[in-house]
Length: 519
Image 1 (cartoon, one colour):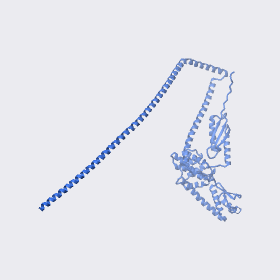
Image 2 (tube, helix red, strand yellow):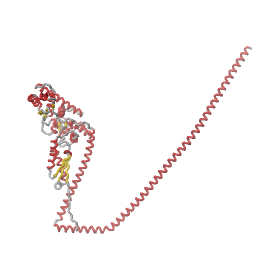
Image 3 (spheres, helix red, strand yellow):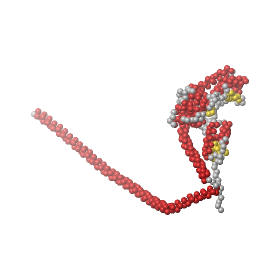
Image 4 (cartoon, one colour):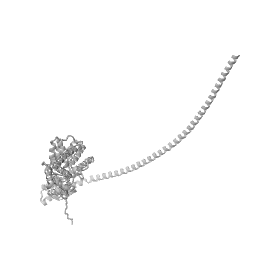
């Protein structure tokens, strides 16, 4: 019994546990179903709401699109109406133009018809005119007793002279036009070159006098009976001008290096508190050493500035000596450096060798450092000098030709001439004294008035332009052209002034005739 009761209790307990589990699962399933139903309903509500919003947006988009299409349709209709109106106007103009052309064609046809009808009387009239011309010619020969052949010859000579004059004027016009074109091209190239050239003008204007601080220093330097001064003049090979009022000494001499040697020696002596013959000799030798060192440095500097390597020491030292040579108050050392730089730029503009241009421009005035001791022009002296030290032949020829000692031939020759003129004509580069300016004007006046037929002349633009007035009875148009060339050539041969001089020949022709009115 006890065993049966225990088994029944276990079964009941298991049954109760199973029923409780089944009941809890059923409740959980009911809750899950309710939750799922709520989620589905919420989703259906949201879907319905979104569908309604989408339909509203679709209807709004359709309304907006319909409005835009209507606006575009109106614009297209307006454009179509405007195009049609413009086409109608053009058709109307074409019709008017066609009518006008038709009228002109009809008028031309009438004129041709009239010309055909009246052509035969014109031919007859022309024949009659030929007969009258022959009769008049016969009567004219009888009246003036002139042979027909001589009259024809005179007329032919007159026509030939007029043809020559007309041809000369046309040739002169063509020459002027070509010169203007060349000047424009040249100005463009020079403008590019000068825009790349930024070096300022050198302010050194010559060797200045040595001014002493006091009378004691002045007298101490000169020495008793000018003994120190005489020794310095003899040693340096210069002349010293004494200005006792301003307590200054001015060194003069043909050799620019010796002149600078004397000036440097005086500058050093001026600072000495005690001077005797031994000190003067020592100072002069010290100044000489320092001067030669400076010449060597200047020559090396100018070659390095232009990036020219392999130049012999003799040429470098001569370029350094140019530091003390001046022409029209322009320092020739810096002038040669400018010309070398400009000539190199000109060579670069035409894709030519830049180094050759730099060398030719740098060495073009090297002869000025030696022209005080050698005879001849500085261009020839400089060319002979650089030729000894292995410089290229075309560079040597350009140096020799830059003042037309030999005729320029290659581009390099003309580039050196152009760069030399640009450097010399820069504002502030050169200046002349009143005496040299007066001498220039007198020389130009003398040259121009030496030609036959010159009535008057005007020198303008500070001697840069000469206008020559000629007699029209002695000088024809052809001779006027030749006269301008002859005057320009004489100026180039006899004058040595920087820059260009423009020569203009003015010929005035006056023609008057007398006529008697018929009564």
